Amino acid sequence: MTSRVLHLCAIRDGSTPDGANPRQAREEAAVVHPQRGAALVRDLLPGFTGDILDVLTGDLLGELETAAAHADDAVFRDPEHVTFGAPYRHPRMLWGIGLNYVEHASDLTEAVPDEPASFIKGDHTVIGPDENIPIPEQSQRTTTEAEIAVVIGRYCRNVEPEDALSYLAGVVPVLDQTAEDILQRNPRFLTRSKNFPGFFSFGPRIVPLAEVEGTAGSLAEVTVSTVVNGEVRRSNTVSHMRYDPAYLISFHSKVMPLFPGDIISTGTPGAVHIEPGDVAECRVTGLGTLSNPVTASN
Image 1 (tube, one colour):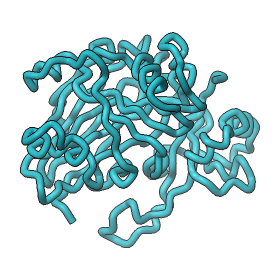
Image 2: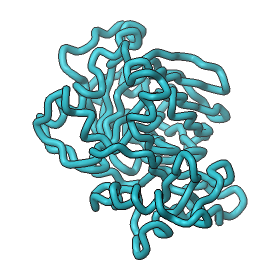
Image 3: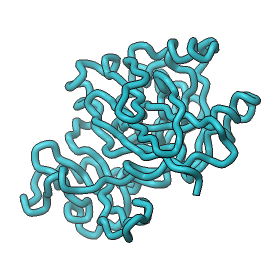
């Protein structure tokens, strides 16, 4: 893909009743230009009515970059004065990767698998920044896991690791939740333990890989941290993954086609037990912070 500068996101209009879940607010596809600020996609591409997934599947990134470069200053606003939602709500495919950091596997007295240990989550799990992570009634021990995820930007099938990163739309912070006590009863319960509502938060922005590499030095040097109530509980760099993002893209592209907007969340440096009243965060070098409050099940 060509060099890009735009961050992909969604902006909430803020018109929710007091005490309502932020997810009830209307969200609009938006971008953030590092120098110019935030703008709605519909103001840059007149007639556009979709979300960021429609931008990706419609192959509109190049057109959007050009429009943002030439748009009037009045289109843009200060990103500090907007509220971000999930970049989009309905990814076609959402892969998670288990036990990918060697140290995390050792914490669980597990061996790092000889091949990536992947699982699929439904789009009903998706929430955005500041939305509630509800602890399910069935679980007495739910964990949160900070991760960096890669977002596919163009059709990807049977690619090799050396080419894989060129297929990205960008990277994004993730909080992946697990009903750990359910999983511990039987490893075959993995799908159930991962698929409660609110168990996949991502955002606030999908950032071009080149920008992240410019900030950290390389993708391998990016630090991912699981933070609860302001305390960094687990932290590690991408270099300590058993299977790096390029390999994961290649591996899964040889299982099935990957399409624009598909997400691969690459594993956590460590899971942390959460309870109602906590605030979970994912902090990633060059991507900022994703934060979600934890509540009891609705």
